[in-house]
Image (tube, rainbow, N blue to C red; front, top):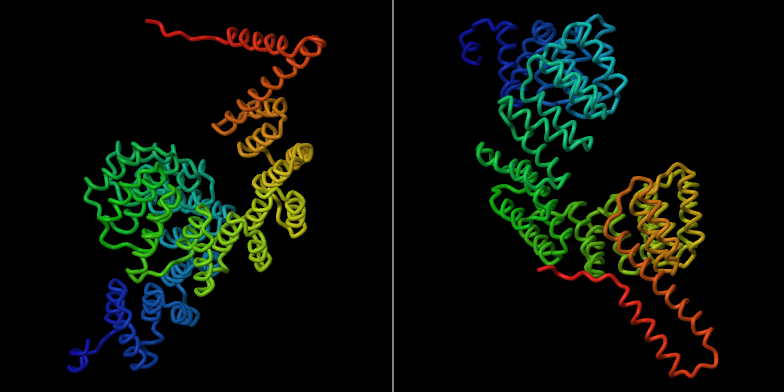
Length: 548
């Protein structure tokens, strides 16, 4: 362009437009700004040219320069579908999803029909906001104008429905596609994983392989996430093997997914091996391995990783601190917990809800309930997690009165208790020996529409058994099964303990009754009789002999 100017050759709008398009492809912001300066230097003939003005909007929008792009867009005399597509896409990328949707509405009001480049961005905005109603409106527009045959639009519909949790609609769109690319398959798989339908996600992944669709990192990471959630060891290992065979680079995203899978299934050595082979590791990767160590009780290794992380000049974030505080809570190490708390204060991390909850839990586990309460009271905006943490802290110490008071206070402040909240109140009463109050809370819980979970039933069964109410513990064990909840090891153990206590009490009662019938008998004769009874009971016990 400079050479053309030296030779006095006329440079038309088309050349400037092509140069700006080249800058868009390369995301060459500095070069594009120089071209913009030359356009302004040549006066209004070029700067007010509709073609060039639109190209400038597209250039700044694609380079994510929001202020300049918006300024140029609003000055456009004629806004066509290209300028609208650029500005809607920019708003969507920058997180201004409501503005993107409003742009979709406004462009139609101005007589400009959205094309198959605008629609995917609008659907993405609907998914991000969870606006399923407007998403269905866009779906109706897609059907009306015939964009449903476009694979990119259909994939965006699947993604939108998946993010809004309407998987039936997502599946209908998916099944109705004549041609599906990897994006469509991945959108369906990711949608299932995000909504906890992990078995369905694995099924789609295998169908994808049968259809011969090229697997991408997103495909494999979705399989690994679903496998981790299901503790599906073989499926997760297959995902790792596919990544290796396909020659996928072990970047931060894929590497972190593999580490997360091995951590969830308890294969720490495999997680360490993947971590060691990763060339670049971000904070997420380090946090995953640290969390893995903490969850598996290897606190020393977790802390060693923290020191190594600092040696790599990486700063701890909220997730790192939550893991360290969890380690301090599990080991009841108040010194480590205080050091982590001080780090949070120095780096302004103590305001984070997750970190604050972890600090509170650490002090509570270390029996520093006053410190825990000070942390709780200092937080202005308390969510349900924070309330449940302080409730659990008081309940664990058997301070049922304060637990109940906080339980009512949270409701006065507009926080509706969930099943975890109710469980803490029930535990507090049982720890304090208030069995009737605990049973009353269960009744109130069910009346309020909150259904007891396995933790609720196990807490009641264990508490009643420990307090000598074995018959009621067994009754609640039966009720739990009647509601369709399968008993686990803790509830079974407590029920068996209740049965044992009942048997022993029955035997003692029977012996006392017999003793009352032998008044006047010498102590030696009575002792001989009771010993004889014990021998008879032993003979009545079932015996299982090994058969040769």
